[in-house]
Image 1 (cartoon, one colour):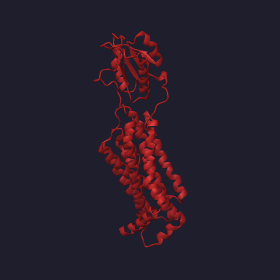
Image 2 (cartoon, rainbow, N blue to C red; image 1 turned 60 degrees about the horizontal axis):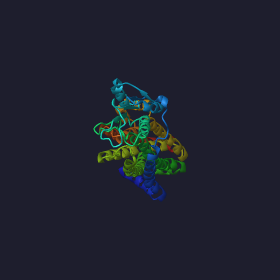
Image 3 (cartoon, rainbow, N blue to C red; image 1 turned 30 degrees about the horizontal axis):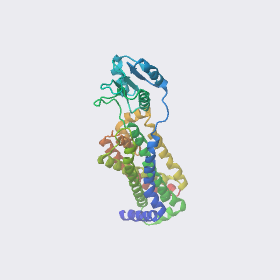
Length: 385
C-alpha cells in the first residue's frame, strides 16, 4: 500500500514540477507577494486623517494665559492638579488622549538661561488619536522656541503609556498572516483543483481507478503531492517574511525599531509550515467534492475571504475582545489559529503553549483531511462528478 502511495505521489510530483511555469509559481509567488506587500506597509501606516476634536478627551494643567487659546483650539480642556493621577491612568487605558502639565512656577526664560521650566506631556502611542494630538501639541509649543523651556526633560520618566512600535506591530499582525496564507493558498488551490477536479473533469481519474491500486492509496498519493507543493510555498512565503521584517524594523521609526529573536522566527516558521498543511487539507476536500476545476476554484476563495475579513476585524475593540475571551479555544480552529498566533508573535505577546497547540491541531487536521479524501474517493457519485 505504501509503495502504491509513493508511485502515485511520484507521478503527480513529476507532472507538477516538470512544468516550469508551475514550478516558478510555487517557488517565487509566495516570496514576492509577502516581501512586496510588506515593503508597502510603512506607507499604509502613515496617518493622514485628523482626529475629530469633539471626540477628544485631553487636558492641560497650569497653562499660561497666552497659551490657553491654542490648547482650546487643539481640543484640550482645563483641569486641576488633583485629577493628574486619574487622567494618567485613563491615558494608559486609552480612555484619554493626552495630558500636558505646566509647573506652578512656569516661566519662559531668556535665551541662554541655565535653568528652564519643564513641561510634561503624557500620551499613549498605541492610540492614533493620542499620537496625533501629541504631535500637534509639540508643534504648537515649538512656536515658542528657540528653547526657552523644556518638554519631557526627565530622562528617567517614560511619558508614553503605550508601546511606541504598537502601530507597526498591529499592521504587521493584521496583514502578514493574511498575505502568507493567501500566497500559499493561491498556489495550492490551482494544484489541488487540477490534480483531482481536473482529472475528474478530463475522465483521467476513472482510468486511474481501474488500476489495481486502492482508491485510498490514489487519494493519499495525490495528497502528498499537494502537501509537498504547500510546504515549498510555505518556505518561500516565510523567506519573504524573514527578509522583510528587518527592513520594516528599520522603517518603523516609532522607536528604535522592531527586532525579532531566533525563537520568534522559529515559531513563525513552525506555525507557517503547519498552517499550509491545514490549508492544503481543506483544498483537497473541496477539490474532491467539486465537479470540475471551475467549481473547485470558485468555492475555495470564499474560505480565504472569511479568514481575511476575520483577521481585519481583530483590530476592532468588540471583535478583539471576543477573540481574547475564547483564549485557547482559538488554537482548536484550523487556519484561524494561525492568524491569531502569528499576530501574537509579531506583537511579542504570545504563549508558547498556544503556538504548540496550533501546530498540533493543524497537523491533525491535515491527517483527517487525507482520511476524508480517501473515503470520498470510495464514493462513485463523487469520483464520477
